[in-house]
Image 1 (cartoon, protein in one colour):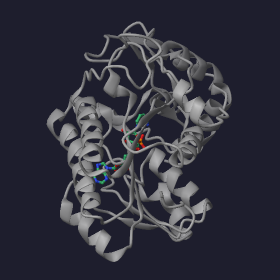
Image 2 (cartoon, protein in one colour):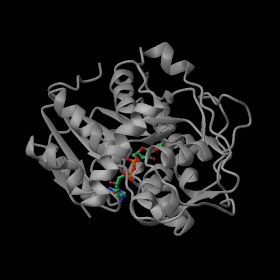
Image 3 (cartoon, helix red, strand yellow):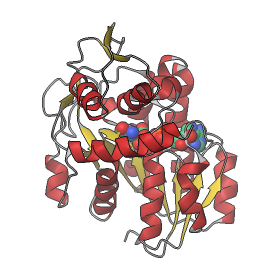
Length: 321
Ligand SMILES: NC(=O)c1ccc[n+]([C@@H]2O[C@H](COP(=O)([O-])OP(=O)(O)OC[C@H]3O[C@@H](n4cnc5c(N)ncnc54)[C@H](O)[C@@H]3O)[C@@H](O)[C@H]2O)c1
């Protein structure tokens, strides 16, 4: 029987990041006994956890790629459940493909070995829609072939296989959730790692011309981060060992539409420059959420509402410096 979240001690790797920090907040709301985070602050920040820390969450600024860094945390805390969010952003794999792959595979192998040695009970691993690559059929369900186009996605696909194989070999209580493109407050807006929504907000607020790579007709399934966390919490009790589920909305929005809607909402009157298409950019991510909607009742935030909440947060976060 899977431990209840209420009353459990829970480790979130990468919990100072975007989705992880929202998950930490939710686990505290659900009265987890203790929430522990390991994050090397590659992209995450202590600020994302300021509220959570004031409510008792514990942050270890350490690297989960080292088995020993996880081991001492397990010695100090009686962990029941692990949510594995740690990763280095997709864009990093264009600069350092090898370490991008390593992060995505080493952290999960460290965790699976700890779980095999009975250090904890249940593992929820975060995969990504990127493992599917460009759609060979649409919408992409959980049986879609894994065709990674970046080393980031290759590492994630390898991690999926590792989870599935450890479950088969050792009957571990581990399962995989596979989010599509998340957006919302706390998503990183700085530097080369920023995704399209935060980057567009940053550019508008700093009077920098907007950019679209390629034609802008490449599409993604954008999901509001709180909806993702809702879905994860709901599937936690339902998903069987070794199974995976897409966390998606079943709607696609083109990058051009996103940029233009944001320009409109933020009253941007400047240029939108067309840049060359990025090598290895997945063209279309049309997700099937059929499995998810059979498992749980799912209420989605409309894109315009989520976008307005995100813009509100970006205006505060970016203008304060
Ligand atoms: N954001 C999305 O749209 C999206 C989509 C699909 C899947 N996912 C998956 O969800 C998870 C969370 O993504 P996110 O958007 O919150 O990313 P994020 O970059 O905001 O969070 C990842 C966190 O992991 C930390 N980290 C990196 N390397 C680490 C290491 N070696 N040890 C410890 N911590 C480390 C980073 O500092 C960061 O805080 C990831 O596994 C990601 O692949 C995200």
